[in-house]
Image 1 (cartoon, rainbow, N blue to C red):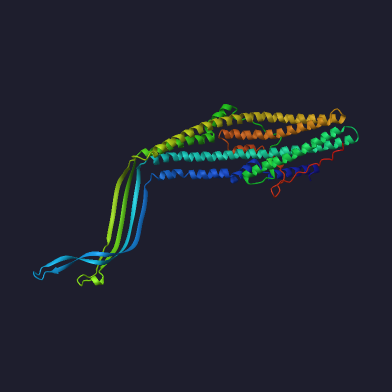
Image 2 (tube, rainbow, N blue to C red; image 1 turned 60 degrees about the horizontal axis):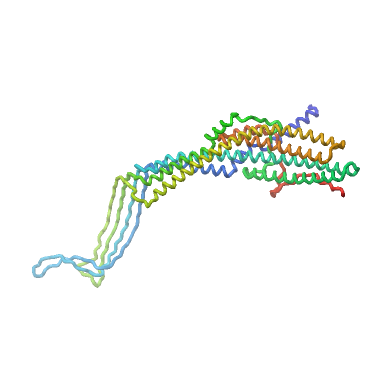
Length: 507
């Protein structure tokens, strides 16, 4: 049998374990965001689309085979003069001759059934633009991959920023509510002291003013927390009732390597914005070469085979009033069969295009210049981000330690001030000021810890080395579950219970 203290300890441990199991941590929130964030899904779709650039460019260099054909049936009716021939015997000599006779208004009916097919093969021998597009395809695929990885890293930064913004806002709300509760007690004590004549009415009024300010601070903190939660929900599509936050003894590590210039050099080489800009320069340079293909000849090998057949009948009739017994209606076949084989080389040399090619070359040259300027800007931005994030990690580490000590010092100062107030050596204003300073120190300390973690993420992102494993490492220090305010079904937030403001005494 377990003793009561041991049983109580086990129950507390199980309760905390259950709360930790239900709370969402940074890594789980990031996984939700990867499934929901439209920016990453857009980048993934563009990456998959860019992968088709190479097979398309390569396919133009393979033989191009086409097959076409047609079949039809037709009838044609014509009327007019027609020359016919007949044999005439000279009665005097008995000789036979052929003479032409013009028969007016003859009717001719042609019936035709026709079909043909044509097969053609074309093989590129020399086309400068196609070879350049094939070389460019590798850069386009690499650019899409860099943009996709940049979107993934940007998502990790955004998730970390918004996750810790929620925790910071929750800490701020907790401190504001604690301050309001303490000020409410201070106001009650001031009223009681005023009633027995120990303090003046001004002390009560000052306590009331502090209470009103603390109430406004709680309202503002609730609004800020609701806003940060909506920003997080925008990324993940989920609303979280519990999140894991770092414990008080959160480890604060130095950046590795502990050299600012090494981080800058790494950023200039691997930062994904710089990599994408560098690939953009390569693509723009190849576009100039593609445009220059308008000056160059093209050479193609082609082979063609065609087959056609026509089953036709022609019938010629003479109107009855012009009929001649010796000239019966004539009907004869008009069939046609034909095959066509061709093999050759086609050379095309551009002579004059109205200045279009020259304009296209100038356009691509200017775009190439623009991409080089973009690369220069990306390198400067990467250097700034690396330096700023590196210094941010160093500064926030020291700031966390300083603010942690400031919280302890302000707590001690508040206790001393309250003790002085009890014996009459300190006023209500002194107590309220000490409490305000403690609140500010608690708020700044909570924010500085999250700023430190965010700067760690930003530093690795600026260097182009941020991976989900880095989030997992940070996630390992998030061991303390915290319950967030309940979200109303209609989208609003349930107000937290606050101590009602006592009725101020009459003046």
